[in-house]
Image 1 (cartoon, rainbow, N blue to C red):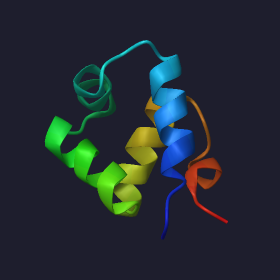
Image 2 (cartoon, helix red, strand yellow; image 1 turned 180 degrees about the vertical axis):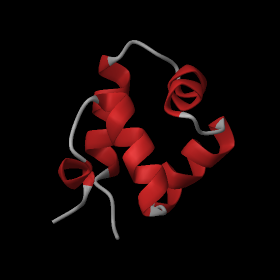
Image 3 (tube, rainbow, N blue to C red; image 1 turned 135 degrees about the vertical axis):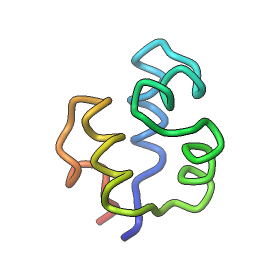
Image 4 (cartoon, rainbow, N blue to C red; image 1 turned 90 degrees about the horizontal axis):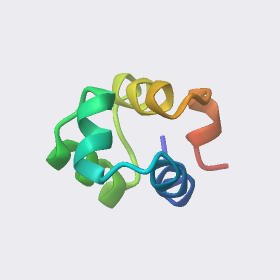
Length: 64
């Protein structure tokens, strides 16, 4: 599944956290989170972690 990485980046910046801080809070490594943003895709389990940390439904982060 392709992710809307622009939306993820914007929402993550809105949290006021660095990538490292956000990744840790989401339960991911910084490298893992960075890789997800670079690839534009991830495992559904990782998508759920990111969505939960951003307080959005996972479906909102999937690219149409």
